[in-house]
Image (cartoon, rainbow, N blue to C red; front, side):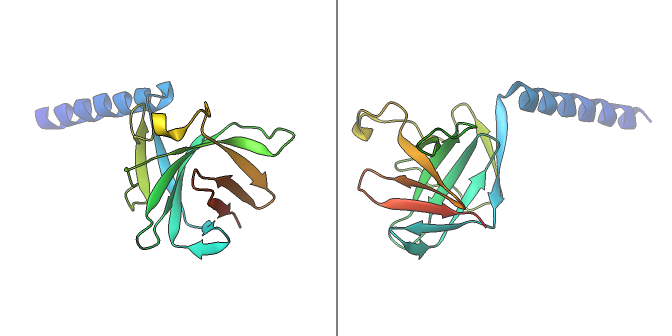
Length: 146
């Protein structure tokens, strides 16, 4: 009986700690959205999108051009169709998983000096059933939502 009480106590402490971290916003999660498709310059490429409430990770996985981008949603759409911004993840590539934890410092997609003078990255534009952004090398990445 003593072991059962100890196990329940440990479970409660872990559950309350986990709930605090999620409710405080210190930890979030991204879930694989299996319904989206990704196009680069009008060509369908292998890739996926891990999506959360306010952010997402878009990864293209075509051979030799694997790359991840972090998407930040504003929560509204302005007059030009801008719904957020996108930051390059540079050398970091998102793992191919169904679930990803998100903290203040992970995923490591921070702005670098080589990204240029744009203060918030590239604009994310809403196009009816898709979102798109243009990268530094002028490639247009379109995320199609069914």
